[in-house]
Length: 165
Image (tube, rainbow, N blue to C red; front, side, top):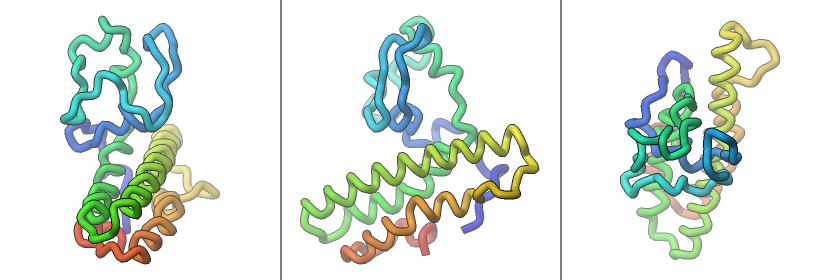
């Protein structure tokens, strides 16, 4: 898997609303409430789009308009969507599917956070390489064991095949 920073940009239409679900938001003057990582924003619609987008500032959510994932959301969405489809479509018992999907959420959250940190660091210091882990290493660390577990459980990778094999 080869990923280049320039290949990804902030594009909410290519994302599963990860900033609205996977980030911890603390109650500040710019946000009227706190939200833990993994909990959806109360203004996130069923279509994974903001229901108050045009009025965010008026509703006390101006911090949302200031946030920039730097492309981490679209990249994470691309990497993990096929894997979720493969788990959901597998012939596994529902209990095992649920367990794998819960783990999928946790691995996706960690990957999103790691990718975002890497993108932010590269933006501040574009030439940094040295001792910092590559994006490929971060993704591999986050998902390698999980993908092995999914395959071992009997899930055939179809949609995720190009990303993980």
